[in-house]
Amino acid sequence: MCRFQSALGGWYPTFTGYVFLALGMASFIRPEILSYYAIDLDEPSARVAIRAMIGGGEVGIGVVLLFGGHINLSLSQRSLIAVAIFTCVGLSRLFAVTIEGTGLLTIQPVREAAIELTLGGVGLWAAWIAEFRSESTSI
Image (cartoon, rainbow, N blue to C red; front, side, top):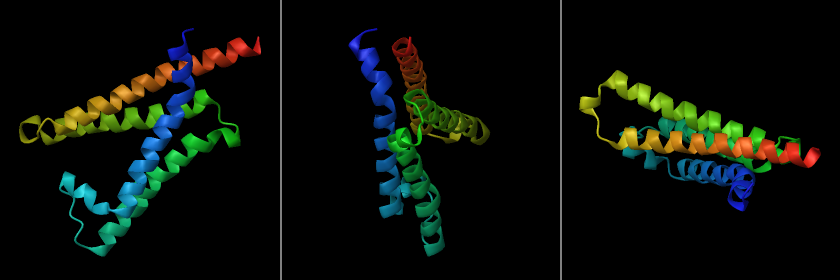
């Protein structure tokens, strides 16, 4: 196995953990960034909900990905957690585009779905590499 593959298997959960942590903190501190998606945040209850559900949720996911090893989650398991999230969000975004009708939307949701699905695919590869690496060291 080449060094790149070995490094990918070990660094993917850390990288994605920092991505989720950064996005969560940004959403928690400045929920107005979601106005990019035309989400109305005029009411305090809306800002609280964004901070809690999106900000807090992403921070929670980031913490599990970064520190899951301390509760005996393997690199492969942590990678698969990120894969499930990225893939579900990406597929949901594409499905939502079909519900809303592609004629009304810009390329932005499709671009974001492509990024999420790519990160999910890379995560599958990283999980496989991490699992392969752990099997070869236990033999």
